[in-house]
Amino acid sequence: MPSLGVSRSRWPVVAWIRLKLPPRPAPLLLMPGPPPPPEPPLDILEANPVPTDPRKRVFAYEEDHEHWVVRLVWDTDDPEVLEAECRAPIYGSRLPHEEVPKFWAAVKALIAPLGPLPVDGADPRP
Image (cartoon, rainbow, N blue to C red; front, side, top):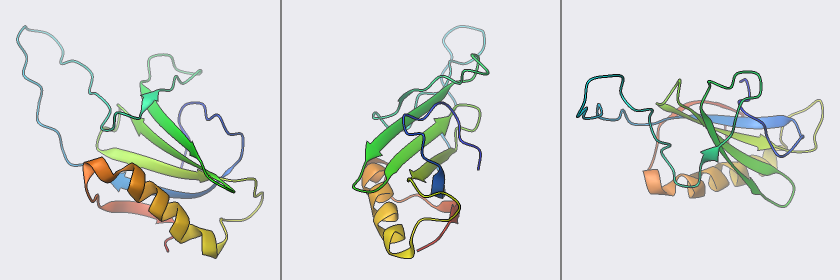
């Protein structure tokens, strides 16, 4: 899973979850022209520029936990997907099995305003 934008944490991604957002209704256009860009699905997401492509609109949020960081990423080019990354100072392996349910719980708490979302993919699953 490619990481978008610039993360505050330089730790590698050791686990991730890809969530499917519900489709949004088409915007109501009052004047002719292209529709406005979509807004992020969560208020906590902030603009996170992609240095290699300034036209790309990516939004992210990072939350520190005891031994790792949860990072939510939403890209306007794929507005129906919300990605969650677990970044930790673990090199060459995955998140320890006992930490996976804690990561999933942290993601569920962050996306609670959206309600339950279907999981499109994850590594690892609890």
